[in-house]
Each structure stands twice: as C-alpha cells, then as structure tokens.
Image (cartoon, rainbow, N blue to C red; front, side):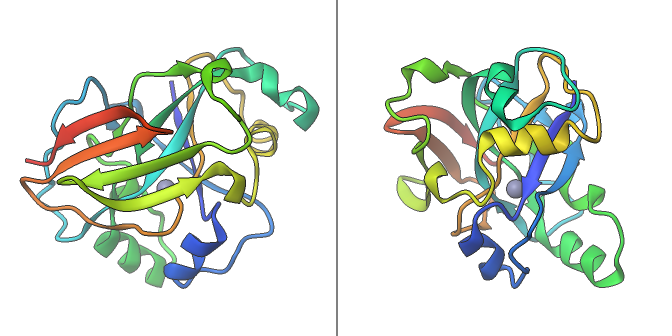
Length: 203
Ligand code: ZN
C-alpha cells in the first residue's frame, strides 16, 4: 500500500509556513514503513530537533481506480480516520532551500500515525468534518474540512491521474493551521468530531 499526503490544502496553514496558496493540489508519498497504528508510541528520531505534528483527516481507498472523474470519486472511499503527518521541519526547511526532495523530512519511520477508521455514513455532515489535536490535554490544532482548498473528490481525481489507487491506500488530506513542535513525553490525542480516535505518546 501507499500513503499519499496532500500539502497546503488549507490556506491558513500555507500562509503560516510562508508558502503560496496552490492553484493545483500538492502531494507527496510516504512508504508503508511510516505507518504507526494501534496507538503505538512515536520514537522521536535522532536526526531532527524539530518534529512538527500536522493533524489530518485520512481517507482509506476501498477500490482500485485510475483517471477517476470527480463525480465518481466518492465511490472510492467509504471510511475516514485521523492521522498525524509528522514532519522534521528542520530537514524540510533545508531541503526546500536547496530545491531537494522532502523524503528525509516526511517519509521516515513511524511518521504516519493513523487511527482506526469509521464509516463516512456515521459522520453527521461529511462536507463539514471537524477535528482537533490535544497535546497533554490542551487543544493545539483545530480544523474543519469545509476549509479545504480541494475537497476529497477533487483530491482523489487529481492524484489518480498520476498513479493507480489501490484498496487500502491512504490519503492524508492536508493540515489546518496551528502546526507546532512535539517533545519527548508528550501525549497526543486526536479527535474526529468529539470522538477520541488517536491517543499515543512521544518517547
Ligand atoms: Zn501534512
């Protein structure tokens, strides 16, 4: 399976990192070794001093498809979860300055904690999904999918132009503003609406 991550999909987040607001989706990949499930702890990696959380709604692809038209894209996901796109911001910043790829900063071991998935049919309003992250009991990031620049269907259509989507692939749909550091000892708890979905420690 592959993990596809959308960058800069919330205008306020693009601005907080001094990035332009994109006219087309920006995406990158993480390998399956970046997956962290069952609330396992995240090991702070030795190569970075600036690991940032990015809290994101994650779609699980449920059928194979390529060149998916936006009007049919809803058939390709039936469940959503919440994930953290851990980013070594110090390494990413250096890579950006040199115009180099981001994998070191984004695709490292354990950089994609993901919750269990719930049927989209259980979400009160699938066009306005609210989510948040708490660190040590304090809200640090809050978002609503109504603020996405590109909606779920447009994202699926766009990325399927470049490669086949397969059952079990995950799509991270971008982070709202409020990204910041984590530290060893922190407890991260991510909520979908008001349901606790992710609950793990940084060690
Ligand atoms: Zn992200």
